[in-house]
Amino acid sequence: MNQFPTGDIDNCEKMVACFRDLKPEELTLISSGKTELTYFAGEILFKQGAFSTHVLLVMDGLVKVYLQTGRDKQLNLQLAKSGDFLAFASVFGETVHTTSAMALTDAQVCMIDKESMRKLLMNNAEFAMRITSRNFRNERQLLTIIGNITYKQMRGKLASALLYLSSDDFLGQDVFPHLSRQDIANFASIATESTIKFLKEFERDEIIKLDGKDIQILNRSELEKIERLG
Image (cartoon, rainbow, N blue to C red; front, top):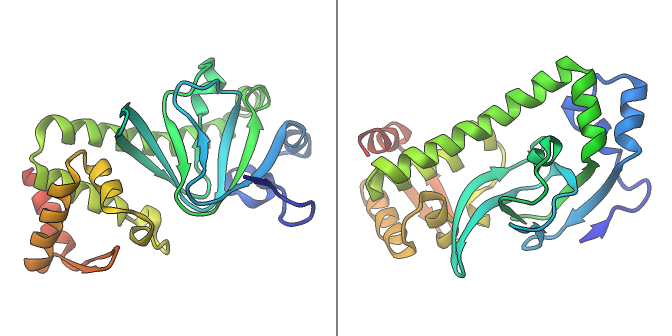
C-alpha cells in the first residue's frame, strides 16, 4: 500500500463523477478528511471484524468484496470498480467491517472521513440520492446471491455469477483474467471442482469460450436461460 505522491493524480473529488457538482465549500469538507492510497493486487483494504474508521471510494481498479465464512471459505459478494463506495455503513454508525475487501488489480482508493461524508449527505439531498442509487445496485446484487444460494442448482448459480462478472457494469474491464477458478466458484457459491466441470460443459455447448483464465461469453441468451431455470 502506497500513498500517492503529491501531484501524481488529481484529487479524488475531481476524478469521480459523483463529486463534480459539489460546491467549493463541500469539496473543502471532503478534502479536509481524506487520504489517497494505492493498493497493489492482492493487498487487503480492510478485514471483516476490524474497526471501520473511513468510507472508501474506489477511483481506479477492481476490488473484491467478500464474506469470510471459515478459515478457508469465503463468499464473494461484489466486484467494486471506479466510483463505488465501500464500508459505507460506517456513515450510519457501524463501527466494525462486516465484510473484507482485497484489491483484485492495482487499485487507487480514496479514504474519506466518515463524519465529513455524513455531514455532506445530510446537507446535500441531490448528492445523497446519487449515492443511494449507486448503493442500491449493490444491494440488488446481494439479493441475487441470496436467491441463488436458496433456490438455484449449481449450473444456475454459475451462470448467474458469469452474467454478473460480464455485465455492462464492467464494460471495458478485463475481469476474468484477474479471477482464479476459485474466485469464480466463490462468486457462484459452489465448489471449485464443480466450477471447473461446468465451465467445460458450457464451453462444449458453445455458450462460453475458455482461453487460460479468460472467459468469453458466446451465447448470453442461453446463459440467461440456464440462470432463469436454475
